[in-house]
Image (cartoon, rainbow, N blue to C red):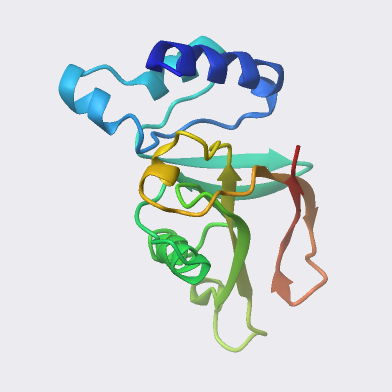
Length: 190
């Protein structure tokens, strides 16, 4: 599919769910177009859909039923061919925003969730119970068809065609010793 057809395909397929999109960040497949021509297809797709565009990474605070989620988005880089190295590449993103409630990445053409917990020392006056910050990192999935793609060309195995869907439930369990905001994770496959 030529680049114009790809942009049209993305807009057509995202249009029905654009009201659910929190925003878009740059992917890596358009780097060459951005460098060579100064045109950013990702930005134009976001504009056509009426979705916020954040460039290389974005921060959002999402309010759901008096519960506020700190969300970070980054397309990601690297990862290699093995699942473990793909997860490790995504896991590095956590060091950028360890206090986020959710981090969304892509790039590796797998779906997965990695969770981290850490103590939020800013919440500790003198000697109260510990407050634990939990961050879920979501790896977005793949829409890459293998035949005639760069994956076939360089000998990568076909990706599973599936996507990540997360529901932010707005439940802040203040009665629990952890500072936890409920998130429900689903994998959607055709």
